[in-house]
Image (cartoon, rainbow, N blue to C red; front, side, top):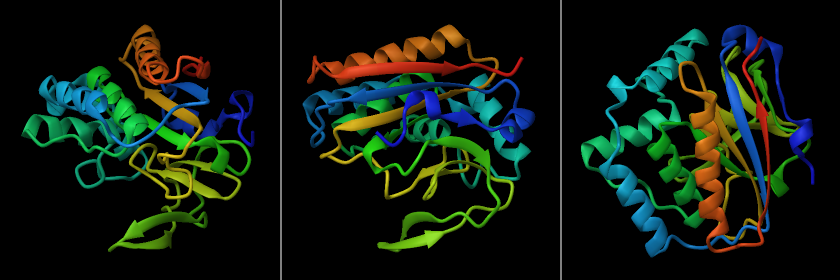
Length: 230
């Protein structure tokens, strides 16, 4: 496997920006993915109904502040959990993508926590959270066509040896490593800022693991917590 838990790092430049940052990393091998189904539809609908107001949640406000710290505009490019909560509060359906993506999006809303999921077999080298130089490639879709963009210098990004896998910390994932219906092995990234409790972060990971095990009891799950600086 190109990216193991022990190889994943958070760069000092990100630590200097937000010393309170912590991330729970989860690798799940042997997942059973497929199209969105009745179970995942229920997860999304239930999460949408109980979505908190993002403007009133301390964790969402912390993420908006973090975005401003590296020069992003959180009203224009929202932290992932902010965008999902906003849809739920407006009465819009949460997006149905596939069973695994639906699972982590529902957990994200339920626990008010940014969560990303990646096909780990598509990685080239280890994952790391860093600040961009601006030269890194980021493959995405614009106007229905696949294009290559680049982050802004200083932007916080997740990346591997081939390029950026997620821009603006947790705003948008690339095409190359996204989880599809054929994904068998996945990396999940659950991200926290103060004042969000670490034990609540761990609870969210347990919730996600339970949803992954429901259709695949033999799925192999490992986790690693990278705690806040200091």
